[in-house]
Structures are given as C-alpha cells and as structure tokens.
Image (cartoon, rainbow, N blue to C red; front, side, top):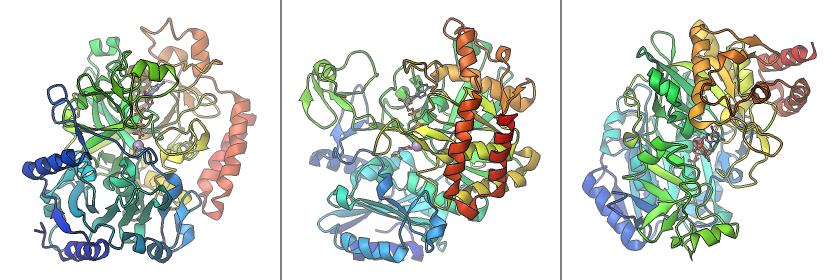
Length: 596
Ligand code: GTP
Ligand code: SPV
Ligand code: MN
C-alpha cells in the first residue's frame, strides 16, 4: 500500500515499477515490525549475518563483493544538459545519452525481486533546512542502512505534503553487481539519481553523497545555501558557552575522529567538552540573525572501521556497539563478533577475513594481509553516540563560528593557519590537496587536488562553486565564520606523523576558538596567520613536541610554497574563464607575499 497521496511521488514510482518490473512493491513505512521482518528475511538468505546478540545487540554483518568495496569516481557522472555546467572535475554525459544507455539495463532488472520504496528526510523532520528523498531499491541492505543514516519512513512523506514536487528521486538496483556496467549517475536539473550494479555504501545509500552533496550542492547554489563535505562539532567551554565549528577533510582524512574528539586530560579537568552534531555532511544557510547556521542532514554515521579503537575514537566505538551494521570487517568466529586492524592488538585466531575465507588471523596478518578491508565501515545510529549534541535535532541548526579545511599533507602545509578573510579562506579551500585514501577505488597515497574536500562530490562546475562561496561570504559580511586550514598528517623523514593528532587536535581547536573571540594574537605570514609558538597549549605533550618539532609543525617553507603556487596556476587553468577573478587575485597576492 502506498504511503502517500502525492501524485508526483505516485507517478514516478509507477514509472520505476514499469521500467524495472519487480514481482512485488513494498513501501517502507519505517515501523519496527516491518524492519524486523526485513532483517529476518536478509538473515535467512545470507545477505546479512546476525552477530553475537549479547555482545552486539541488534548488530548485523554484511560482506560486499571484492570488486565493490568503495566509491567509484571514474563511473560517477554529472549529467547536465550543457557539458560546461558539470565542469572539468566531473565526468559528464548528456542526460539523453545516459538514459538511452542505462534504460535497457534497468528494463526488467527487478524481475523476481521486491522493489522497496523508501521515503526519507535529510535533516530533522520539519526543519526549514531539511529535504525529502525517495529511493527505490532491490536491496534490503540499502533499506536497513537508510534506516540508520536517514529519518526514514512515513513521516518523511508528511513533511513533503500532498502536492509538492520537491523531492529527490533515487533509483537503485544492484542488478548483477557487474563492475563493467556500474554507474552512479546524477541528473541535477531533474533532482534525480540513478545507481546500478553496486551494493556498496556511498554508491547505493543515495541520500548520502549522491543527494546530500552532489544534488544538494547544485540546489544550494540555486537556493542560496551550502551543502558541504563537513563535520559539525560543538566545543563547550568551562563557562558553559558552546562554539560550533565545521571542518571539511577529504574522505578518510579524520572527520569522524575530529567530530567525536575527547579532549586531553587538562582540558577535561578545566571543564571543556566536545559535542558531535555531524561527522560527514553539513547543510548551511544564513539565519534570521545574519549568521551561518548548520544542520547535519544525516541521522547516523557511516564510519571507517580500521583505526577505530577505544583510544583513538572511544565515542565512535561506543556508537557501534548496538543496532549497527558492519560492512567488510573481519569476523571473530569464537564469539561471532567483529574485528578490524588496530581495534586491539589481538587479531582473532579463528577469523573470517573480509572476503569470507576462514584464516588464522595473526598468521594471515604476518603474511602481509589485512583482515578487514581498509574501507570497511560501520553504520551506527547517531543516538548511540555518547557525545551527541543536544542540538542534533534542532531544526534551526547551530551557528557556525569557524570553518576548517584540511587534508593529508606530508610536507608544506603547517599544523594550522588562519585566512586573512573570507575570500582568502575560499582561496585556501580551493587550493586543498590531499593524498588519496581507500575510500574510493584507485591508488592510495597519491597527492591530488581536492578543493573543499568536494572534488568527488560537487554536483556542478567547480569554479562556479567557488563563485558561490564568494557570494555567500558577501551575504554574511562581518557575521561570516572565520576560515582556517589544518594538517594533522605532517611526517618526519621516516614517514612518521609528527603531530599526535586525535584528542590532541583539541589544542588546535582551542587556538581557533580564541582567534574567533579575538583573545589571542598571531604571526602574519605569507600564507596567513600562524599561532605564536607560546599560544599553542602543549601541556602534557612537551616530551613529544620539542621546540624543533614545533618549528617543523609551524614552518612556512617559502620554496615549497612557491612550488605550490606554480602547481595551483596549472590546476586553475582548466577552469578557464569561469575561474572567479577573486581566486586568481588571491593566488597572485600569495605569490607576491612569498617573493617579498
Ligand atoms: P569518510 O567517512 O571517508 O568521509 O572519512 P573521515 O574523514 O570521517 O575519516 P575518519 O575520521 O574515519 O579517519 C580516517 C582515518 O584517518 C582513520 O584511519 C583514522 O585513524 C585516521 N585519523 C583520523 N584523525 C587522525 C589524526 O588526527 N591523526 C592521524 N595521524 N590519523 C588520523
Ligand atoms: C566518503 O567516502 O567520503 C564516505 C563514505 O563518507 S561513502 O559514503 O562511501 O562515500
Ligand atoms: Mn565522507
């Protein structure tokens, strides 16, 4: 039975049914009974494995095909009518050509299968910043994940109303999970997403990267708001005041970790606390008081498992102890629980590695293998998180004081610096480069440009996106958040990280907040404002952060930065006339300052 009278929804679902020809259509109302029945069915077919229900209540395990373990950027398309509107950083194909190619692949693809119709809200139900999506899929894994990641079910339709056409249409079929015919396709002008031949995370949970970033960035440009690949956190100071900060780092570069940070002992003693509003995506809009407000459109965390442990990210681990779905981690067969690299120092002897083979864990690792896939993930409800912000469901969002950019840079970029103003900050965001990670298929550790951490997620021309940033800055005026850049990943000559990172990143947040409040001075350098050495609180890590290491962390090597300028000039060329003049001016000014 359909859950809405909205004729636009009904018409589109009818079309999808006619195209994919499922043997059954099930509307997802989000009720406990329905979800329990789906879980049971998935367990009975082997699609999901039930884990130890005493140790991990409500938790399930899922294994994807070895060729289907990450986002596929080379098979991701932005299909705008005009090629130029997708820009040089996206794969493009005309909507008609792409539909002609994919329609035969979808034709009858759900024969013998059930189509699940999933209504969902990105953002708190009733929030003026929230938006509705409908995803049709032939995967129970998708339904169960969307239940964690979004506000899923009938209430989303209430939010849409009976006449609105403002919902994002997502068509997904796992088809034969054929990598040669895998496509993740966006039609931003039609609020539509088509995904086929994958059953993994960001490729199929269409509310996430496809809607909340690629489609939403396009909507945001047209409707004067911003959709960003950013965490949102609140730092509560000893006086009780909370400052909100957002941060954009590329995939697998530390958003979830920073969002759930536990401050070092000294800070905790003084009464500091960090609250998580979001760990991956922020939607931001100017509020009635002129400031920029952010909501997290998601309702859960799709977090990287390897590296997560009680010390590195206690709160993420605690979030993933119940009602969580684990994808591509290893199984400990002794007690039917999960394991991944760096969870602890005891890989299970009686293990099943992520591809499904039973192995002796320690021996398998000694042979140079990994038990869990490097991009294995947990899907955990936000409500499980011990430090979830009391403002998590606030429909108005939280006011943003600072925006941080960052990436993985072994050299060049210092631990932290502040932009001179919003336009300079926009330039800094446009200039972000980062070493690639396992979150997307392809080589790992290769330095590439990833402006605002949005290279894989910007649903339109990247240079127009920078123009939109500049416009937002003008609208916000002196109420605009301050913009910073951080780098947790500087290394020594042996390749070891020289900054301890994780909880100790609080020391950098502390400086950032003081800069926002205007209570601490800074050194003006060619690239921006850097902390005065005595202004970074290093209490407790003085042994590790010797004066020499601190020099290295805060170094601005002019030769390396001149190379950076040369490289950026080359990078910007591809944007031609669409590159905002302001961005080019900022680059010229940086060069002038470096040559002084
Ligand atoms: P996506 O979910 O792909 O968008 O990733 P993310 O940006 O949320 O990254 P996440 O926090 O999951 O971290 C990815 C990897 O970076 C993990 O292996 C972490 O252990 C590591 N990491 C996170 N923060 C730090 C840090 O401060 N220092 C160091 N050295 N590593 C870190
Ligand atoms: C990322 O790759 O940035 C993720 C994981 O957050 S996915 O949802 O697969 O895109
Ligand atoms: Mn991400």
